[in-house]
Every structure is written in structure tokens, then in C-alpha cells.
Length: 156
Image 1 (cartoon, one colour):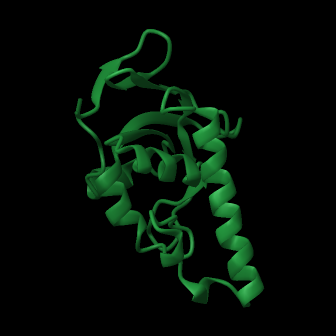
Image 2 (image 1 turned 30 degrees about the horizontal axis):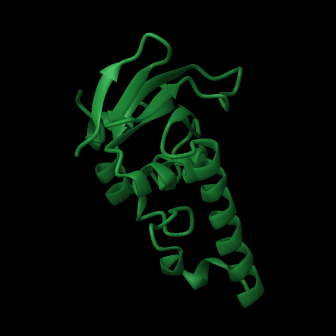
Image 3 (image 1 turned 60 degrees about the horizontal axis):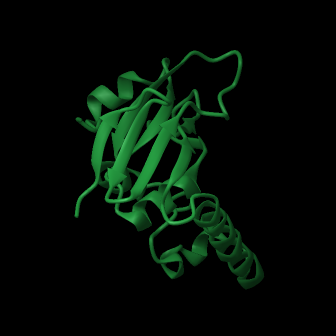
């Protein structure tokens, strides 16, 4: 069974698969002085793009997180535990894959000519584990042009 996406009168968009439903709602992490536009990004395309940011990418298999991103084995273990805890929090919050997911919030500047997530990496990791094909993203309008260069949008 595949996920279906529809406009949602109670949020931005709703993804459904059988009895499961995810409501994408406005970001709770936007900064007051930045003008955002919320769009749907294709999760598979985003993952391919995001993997280049090795130390911020949250892989499906956390053991694939690069050790070089941490200064010590203890830091590496703590990093993996933090990722696991945050992903698990989303699993508990959305028990069974149903509930509201705020749009992932992005930084207002590019890092090495790339978009960077400000808040929401673990939401993406959890949605990926469910097989959801997209996610809502609050992109600062100053960096929205980058999405036109790198076609990451999801089409309903």
C-alpha cells in the first residue's frame, strides 16, 4: 500500500495509508524576523541531496553515521544515542504513524551553497522509516531560489 497525499482543511497537507494518517502542519520553529514559505519536499530527493552534509544527515541505519564527525568514541556513542532518542520520541508521539508533524524549519542562509535544516532532522528520519514520500518544509524565502536549481519539490 502506498501513501496518498491530499490538501488538509485542518493543516497544510495530509498523508494517508490505510488507517495511518499524518497531518503536516505549520512549523513551530520559525524565527519571527524571517519570512518563510512552506512547501512539500520529496523525501527521496531530499535524502540524496542531504547525504552530502555527512555530519548533519541522519541515516536510516544509525551505525552508518560517520565516526569522523565526532571527536571521540564517547562523543560518537552520545551522538547515536541522541539520534535514537529523538527518532523514538517521534515514534511515540505519532504512535502507529498517525498525528501531526510540524514543517521542518530551515536556516535562512546556505552553508557551502546548500540548504541546511535548523530544526527537524529526526522528523525526516522517522517519516522515512514509515515510507512517507514527502515532508513539509518551512524554507526562508531568501533561500527558496535554491530549490529551483535543485528540484526537490514533491508534486501532489
